[in-house]
Each structure stands twice: as C-alpha cells, then as structure tokens.
Image (cartoon, rainbow, N blue to C red):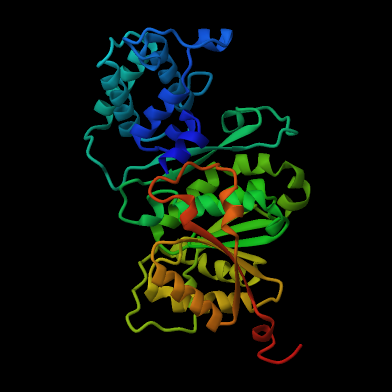
Length: 412
C-alpha cells in the first residue's frame, strides 16, 4: 500500500488527503530535487553530510507545498484544509528529522511553524475531538477545453480540487473518512463513464458523498441522489454537496443547458435501504433518531431510488447479519425495471462474508458480474485513500435481475 502511494501520488496530494506523515516525508525525500538540478538536469551535490532533501532550499520547498494547500495565491486561507493538528505535527516531524543533520535555516519554513503554533494556541486543547472536522481534498482530472476564469476551486489548469469534509475522530464511521471502496468505485466509473452518463443515479449508504459528487462532475450523469440514514452523515453530506457545487457545474459545463434546467445535479436525503427489504431481522437494530427536517426527505429519496436507472453503493457488505435484507432490497429495486443495474464496490475482508453475499445474490435471481481484477488493477489512481487496505481488496460488482426473475419464472 505504501509503495502505491509513493509511486502514484505527489507529496501535495498525500498531504491534502492527510496520509500518514511518514509516508508524506518519504514521498518528499524520494521526489525532491533542488532548483539548480532541475534547471541544469544534473545530479544533486555530492555532499553526504546533509541529505539534499533536508537542506535550506528543501526546507523552503516543503513549506511551499503546504502553503499551496492552505493558502490561495492572494494569501487568503483556502477553503479545504487538513486539520491544524495534522499540519503542525507534520511540520514538527519533518523538523525533527532535519535537525538530526543540520539547522532549520529557511525563513518560510520557520514562519509556517510559527503560524501553526499560533493556530494551536488559539484552538486550545490538542487532544482528538470527535466533533472536530476538516476538509481532505483531492486533485481530480479537469477538462482541458474549459476556459472560464479560474478560481480557488479550479486553479490548476487541467486539474481541479474537490473538498470533502470529514470528522476523523467521530464515532459515526460514515463521516470519519473517505473509505477505500468509495474511492475505488469513483475511479472505476471515471474510466467507464458510459455506465452512468446521462442517467439518474442513486447512491445507497453514501457516507461523505465523494463517489456521487465526483461522478456527477466527471461522468456527466443526469442526476445523482446521495442517501444515508444517520443525522451526522446527512448533515455532512449536504455540506459536501454545497461546497462542491461550483466544481460540479464547471466540470459538467457541456451539459449545463440541457441538464441543469431540470434541477440540481447532486442532491441528498434520508433513506434506510432496509425498508425495501422483505426480510425482517430477528434482532433488528433500532435506527438512530434524526431531526424532522431530515426525515421529511425520506419520501423523496424513496421515489428517486425506485426510479433511478443506476444504483451504486460502496462498502455496504461488511456484516453477515445484514446481507439478507440488503440483497432483498437490491432485488426489489432492480425488479422495477429490466434496464436497471446496480454497481457495488465491495471490500474483501472476510471470505465467508463474501461467499454468503454471492450465494444470497444467486438465490434471489440477481446476476452479478465482477470486474476482472486485471482491469481494475490497471485503473488510474486518483484518490490516495488506500492506507488501511489496498485497492486490490475492493471488488466491483455490476448487478441486474436475471430474465427468469424479471418474468416471474415465465418465458418471455
């Protein structure tokens, strides 16, 4: 996993996604070259007493990467930033290694250290706070034919920044991070936009909403509706939709005149997919309470889920107890139309759970085609989320009802 992060992503991308600090510093060490070497295409100086990547110029380069994330070109604060705690500790980690070899001499690095010491004193206790949030951000491909004025959300020419608010220490796992399966599903659909282009899409268990937001912009969907069932997820999801609206509209510029008149390209709402199930659990878990305003979105979400041409979900197969109602729900939703499909990204954690899911699909008459591993392994990496589990552990499954199931067992 570490090797993929080091070979596929630049140091800036790793910091934006709050990748573990040792990996970030290893990335900087392996890629940094002094400006003089870049200009002359020569090898770095051969002074072995201080590694090149810890010298005064390198200290400034490291600070510049962070400044590019936290500040706009005009000096104002960027909207999408990692936690103060993460940046401060990253600076301290780099400084502690530098000081084993030489002095901290770079003025810009020193200024950045002071800024984050001041931020920490302003924000108070450095202990992890379950209610503390930040924005991880991702550099995504951008249409090179788009020539509108660039702003903070689109300031990199052919690339743009998508920001996702997360709560790294929250007890609701749905808001804690961008999970590997969600990132893999987005990368899969970005390379196969024809699966969702011009179609209505509903995402079940959307969590922080990255997958749906990204495919809305890059895959030219007709609409995407994100759903989940906890208040923390829904409030956070609504925020993430809002802060990325400008990016989505910019990315979808070719479809503005025809699609946007019909409504917002990305919406969100409350939906507990088990309500579509014919399976009743003996020990059903009581659903968390949500506010009335959020619960009022349930009827809209149910109708959208029933009409959606494509259902997507990531990392929803993790508890064997919930496989029967999940498969039952998917079957009922797919049976609404013979042309409807579901695309799930499933993280392979337990062989028995995976086998149980496959058996339940077969019994329900749901055809499941897994994307060949060789094809998913060749996908471009866009999101550096593969820290706890590699992308190879994520299987992409496209589901549809078998003909006999759709026809209730009759030949048609």
